[in-house]
Length: 448
Image (cartoon, rainbow, N blue to C red; front, side, top):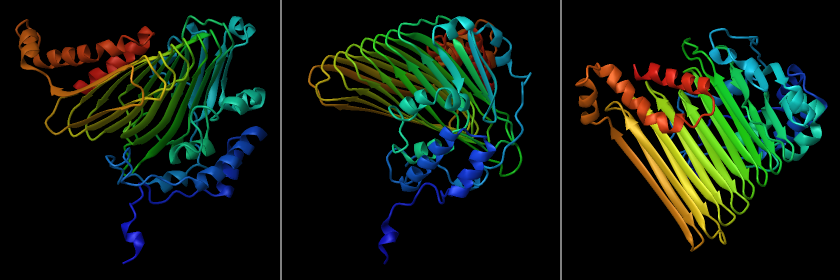
């Protein structure tokens, strides 16, 4: 028997990209010379990085039997028409009130604005494409060099090769931005791929809030699929403070992959909030590295899966320096035949004494056939730490339902109130009223 028969099966059956494909893709994207060179180098990395296999711990619970990676890769030269402004998406309604605003459609930046006051202070708020022309030195220093690297994983290498569309935010030392900067990305139903990148760099003592929202309608055609492979890099300097919010509501034909990582300096604070209600399949790898003493990382998430949706989150809290704090709270609701998987780990490196870390995953099952897997973990290599974790999976209890119904609230509204109350502690952490309300509205639709 051939030894190949004992090799683990790959997750993706085919994963080839040719240099001619990348050349045409770069030409279609009207890349700058800097970005064109970047793609050429990244393709060489992609050719070397092995794809995941089914016995990889972080991949063995996924079901991607219907996803055809090569079909998506063959469409990278296809470009659907961008929509200048989707009136049905309320994200546009108050865009003018933000000190900085950016709008992408199908990988093309259609709107980009930053207040003159912030420009005068040296703040950069730019699309990836514009940054590659006007701030190539900034990209050369930070783009996939310190947080997410092309050599990290197969999906990261693919993303590096095909980056298209994205946000670059740079805040110089000591600059404080009080009001949230905002960015929105819209994909049309016929857009086959997206490779959005978010790069945030806060120098020492800086402060900023960035809220990103992603959405698309569902393509109901038989066999339709879209692939999103995105990346987020957050670099928080010493004594800096960053609030970052990401809300995802992709169509139900979308396979959504993301690689996200933050590096947090000494005596700095990162507050990272995610909300997810869309896509057919989502798999996100999320890491926060506490690099400097006294740093804090607060990670919050809400996600709601219904029908046959799958949502997988792999989180990692890395305590590299001593005296740091991290706190993670992810909450999920699921109904119908949906499945969620959360796999979290706290790692305390040698010498990271006085670590204070916690992680919790709470799951609310709204149907008998849904399934939630919750897998917390600790990896501790220091002896003076406080690290705890918790995970729960349960259904709506009878007592609160009885209480609400006894006061004249019908069962459906009572159910909605309980689910909204379950998510409220996390949703309230989103620092913009209208973004909170949009997420609440989408959750309400899924409750029924």
